[in-house]
Length: 399
Ligand code: F3S
Image 1: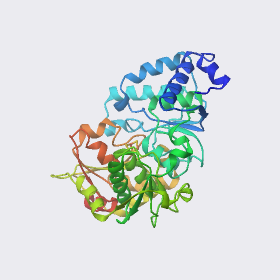
Image 2: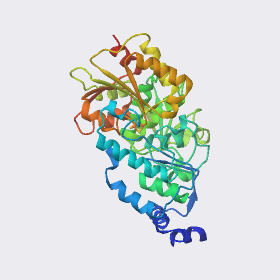
Image 3: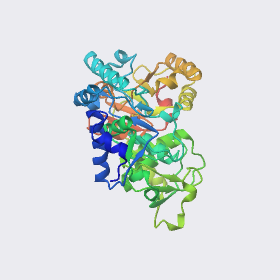
Image 4: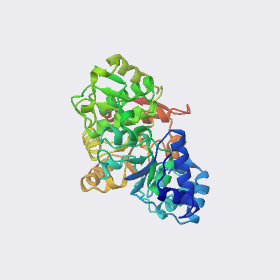
C-alpha cells in the first residue's frame, strides 16, 4: 500500500506509540481489503460506547491512548451509551454500571470526541456532504451516510473508527471506491410503504434475503429522512448492506442504468406480511413500548404526540422513547416531550433499547415499530416482540 512520507513517519512513531499503533491498525485493515492507499476523512462516528456492549476490555484500549494523551484530528462523535446520563436511576440502571459508563465517556471526551451519544448525527446538524470520505461505525448511520447523503464510508468497527478519528485517515477500499457503489439488484417494491415500520420491514426483508448486495429500489411516493433512516437501519441489521439507491430519491441513483442490472426481484405485499408475522411473537400482554431505533426526530415526536392525543398511557405498560440530547433540547421538541411525559410516556436521551442493559433486565414483551430493534432484542431468546406501526402501537396503549 502506498503511504505518504507523513504517514510513514506517523507509522514509525514520530508522534508517539499510540498514534503509530492506530496507523498500524488502519494499514492492516487496508492490506486485508486490498486498499491502495490511505485517504483523509472528514469525520468519525464511533460506536463501542455502551459499557453493556464493550465491557472492561475497552479500558486497556484507553490506557494505550491516554499514555500519549492523543486527541482526535477530525470532528468525531459518539454512538448511544448504555443509559441516559441524567435519568439512569429511573431507567433502573445499576450504580456500578453507571460509574463505568461515565468513566468511558470521560476517556472519549479527553480525546476531544463530542459526547453526542446518538446514532442519528445527521438529525442534529452533523450531516455529511456528497462525496465526503468518513469513518463511521454505527450500521444505520453508515447506510444513511452512503445512501441518503452520498457520502462514503465503510462500516467501521469501534476501534477502527477511533483509529481514523485519531489519525485522520482511513484505508481506501469498499464504499470509498466508485466501482463498489454500483447496485447489483433491482427491487420493484409492489407492497405499500405507508408507515415507518413498512420501510423498516422492507429493509429487514431485503437484508435477510440478499446479505450485503447493493440494491436499487424503484421510487417511493414518499421518502423522507425518517423513512430513509428506518430502511437504512433494518437493511444494515438483517443484512450488512452499507448502501442502497432509490430511483429519483437518492443522490447517486441518477447515475445508475437500471437496464444493466441483471438481478431483478419483486417485493410483494406477502413478503411484507411475512416480516410482520415473524415479529408477531407476544402471547401474553406487552410490558413495554420501545420507540426510537434509530433515535427519534422532532417529526417522530410530533407523530407520537398526535397519535396519543389527550389520552393517558395504560397503567400496565411503559412507553419509552429514545432520542438524542440535542433533539430533546430543541425548543419545539422540549414542549412535545413535556406533553408526552404528562401522558405517562418517558423520553430518554443518550441511549437506546438495544445498548442499554435496563431493557432486558426489566421487560419481556415489547412493542416496537423498528425491525432493527426487533431483530436485536430477540437475539438471545429472552424477549418477545411485536412489530407494528407507530399508530397501531399508540392506539393499543392509550386508555
Ligand atoms: Fe440506534 Fe440503538 Fe437502533 S444505536 S440504530 S437506536 S440499536
